[in-house]
Length: 169
Image 1 (cartoon, rainbow, N blue to C red):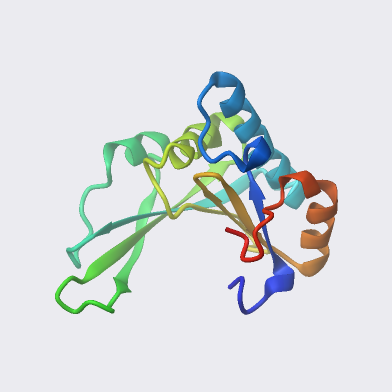
Image 2: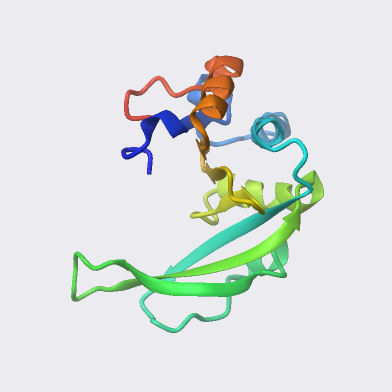
């Protein structure tokens, strides 16, 4: 999406100096504060969010979710499965997507965001129930997909969190 609508995308780093992984309680606090700041500015009146999580394996049938995901997002239900990448026909990988509705609170989201930051899980997407924006946290930051005006406002408000790499990486 970022290549098709670059005006609707921005990438923020979750730690100063583009540090990728938190190593202390203080750095975890900064990382979580940055995620919540962006979420609050995107949807200050959204009490709940869709949480989409993904798991990958070589099986077309979805299997029991990893214990860490079941713990932090216990109400998620299987939404769909599809071939993730068919470039290597001898090694097909299936992506299994799960969705839940969670309160947009630190208690509900921080455990999930910590797993993302620690690279335990990947492929998480958060969105309001009307889907007017998407937030994709990753180890090292978060990608926002939103209307151009919202993206411009976020960039202006948090310019010191922006990636310095042209591709956003």
